[in-house]
Amino acid sequence: MLRLALPVVIALLGAPMGSLLASDPPAILPLRDRKPVVDGWVKLRLERLLPEEMRRYGFDMWLVISNENVEDPAFRPLVPEDPWAVRRLGILVFYDRGEGGIERLLVARHAKEFYTKDWDQFNETQWEALARIIKARNPKRIGIDQAVKIPYGDGLTAGLKQKLVAAIGPEYAARLVPAEDLAVAVLERRLPEELPLYDRVVAITHAIVREGFSSAVITPGVTTLDDLDWWFNQKVVDLGLERWFFNDTSLIRRQGQPLDRVIRRGDVLHCDIGLKYLGLNSDIQELAYMLREGETAPPAGLQEALRRGNRMQDILVGEFRDGRLGNEVQAAALRKGRAEGLEPRIYTHPIGLHGHAAGAFVGLPEYQDGVPEKGEYPVHLETAYSIELSVRTPIPEWGGQVVVFGLEQDAFISASGSRFLDGRQTALHLVR
Image (cartoon, rainbow, N blue to C red; front, side, top):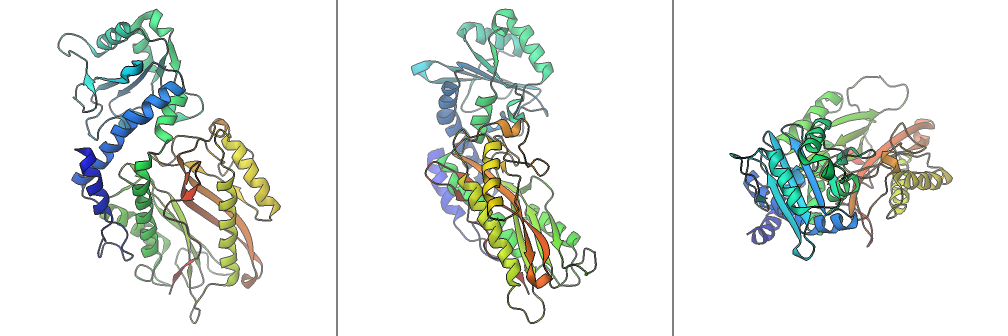
């Protein structure tokens, strides 16, 4: 049924949104039509990614255990959409039967498609059921979500681990192995089937930015940054989408102008907009220029600043290599950017099933010489990253004032050629 539903849903996504957004991006599906899409990806994740990654990292069993409202980040991406996915205690057991494939067992109150429920809740506790399952299969390496570098691989709480060890006894407790790499891999890899719709998630974000950075929303000398902040946040909610952070704006203004939050002609506006749709997150920073009376284009220096930012984006994306540490990618890109006089800062992060997602970090604003732990993790291909950075540029038309342009666009990192999802900004938005 899911195979039939997905093409229909993809076709629906190509329809115009009418008056919802001025630029007619792809349609936003009603809630009922979103579930087959998200659940279809869960099924593919379980059937395709999970066997590959369990075998890559040498686990014949993987346990994902969560308390209600204190969930392992890996739990929901592995189960069909359900607000009661973890009720009280949820236990997922994955066991590699070799040619028989990965056995998927559920030790929880709610029955889930894609899983076999293996718990007689009236005659045994969940921990007793788990111990029985483990002893019957006698796994050699049991992966648990315990990590040092990437928090998304660290979902097993100390209390749950204590209960787990007590339930399975010392013989099997000795076989528990941190599965950080496995958990991160399952979360960070993007399915080919996700990519056309990921482009559309980002296209919706870009369309919201275009509408927000227009005279339909901004009145020079009247509209404030606070007004614009709330417009962006309200727009996301009104479209039936989720925010994963508070969308906000800022401005760059020529020196000597009033230091307030009223948007005026001649200002450069900056936004940071992120949303979640179909289980995928976007994170976009773009820039707009408030045209002065009589102007038809921004000062050339401001457009040059954006061009320099685009150049730095190209440099950074070009430094991604499979297995290269995040810190190594950052260092190589900074060297090239500095050699070209771009004065860059890099603070790029993985994106996907979460906003600041599972995977290697490539810089942080406060760490331009490598990020402890998160930057010491390797970059992998078939993943998505928010290419987030800034460059410094003197603006001749502003008396040589140096401006910092912060840019962010989501990109897919692939062996066949990395690309920006739904493209990227190469010209300033203009507000008349």
